[in-house]
Image 1 (tube, rainbow, N blue to C red):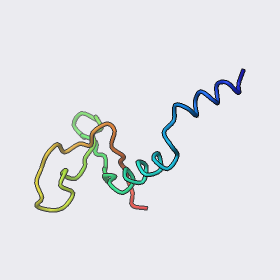
Image 2 (tube, one colour):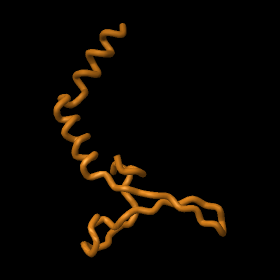
Image 3 (cartoon, rainbow, N blue to C red):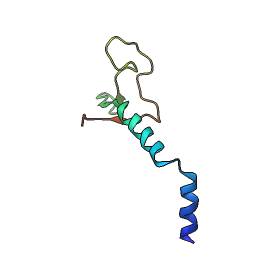
Image 4 (cartoon, rainbow, N blue to C red):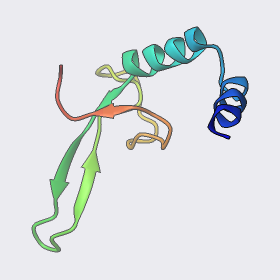
Length: 75
């Protein structure tokens, strides 16, 4: 029945405050990204700031990793 499914799901979820803490951390460390189109080929690509996030703090992988939260505009 539907109630069994709900009980099973709630046992599998982390405590709500843990989920909230993780989401808040992702929000606070989100990367601002933009997009660009190669006019020669018409292919779209992503652009983002260096991993250091501040000028002169080092390079690293220029594109965000899959689990990272990204945004296009400041809120």
